[in-house]
Amino acid sequence: MSDPPGGLGGFPFGMDPESLRDAPLFREMQRVMASSSGPINWELARQVGVASAVEAGEDREPTDEERSGFIEAVRVAELHVARFTGLDAPTDVAEVRAIRRAEWINANAESMKALLEPAAQRVSEAMMRAQSDSMPAEMQAMSGMLAQISPLLMGAQVGSVLGFLAQRVLGQYDVAVPRSGPGAVLFVVANIRQFEGDWSLDPTDFRTWVAFHEVTHRFEFARPWARDRSGRAPGTVTAPRHRGRGSRRARRWPRPVRSTSRIERRPDRPGDRWC
Image 1: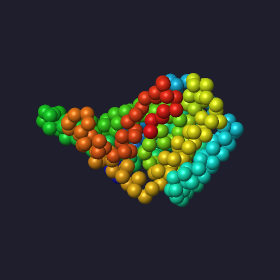
Image 2: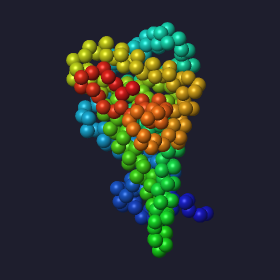
Image 3: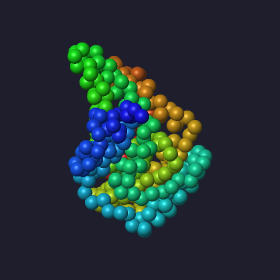
Image 4: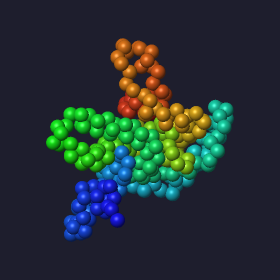
């Protein structure tokens, strides 16, 4: 039986995995490199993200009281958002989870695959074409190795972004794009605690506001057109040519793309979130 395309045992460079049995570091590298076959190595992205999020400090488990408080806030918010907007509630019942930063990274590494992988595939293909065109003939044999390294580079970049976001987001929809998989409303409790302390906010009032923010976006992305439009955005949006700051073309970026571009908190407006 022939070896898989990535090499023996899935190891990308054709090395026999048994030769690494006494080198646990390299065995772990083998596992990570063989864990993904797409344009992004998601296992590496997850590990880089979790390691990056550690910089934010304490990330203890939410208490049972905090979990029940978020569930109650979400159920109240669902009633008010439906009444105020006139929108039909999503057909599924959202799972409400109070989580740690690492859990947010794991959840989003899974749910954002469908959004990021098509764009990453196009970037990888463009990089390979550029390298192939500029590489001397005697070095063409290296193109296969470069193709195997590309998912690692993409994974490291995605992981860095997830780790950065995990230190700042309050919930699932601070990055305002639809997610694949079952509906869930997530609250990153360590960040919420920190924000409350920094601005001397009443926990009940602030957590109720966060719940309204999350539920409003959940209603928004339950619209039949929202998921399809946002899913097309990474593959169809290109940077507009410069025509001045007020150009009509610059204003035609789809809203899901624009809404995720604000990644700075406003010190003069504590309640001003990303979207």
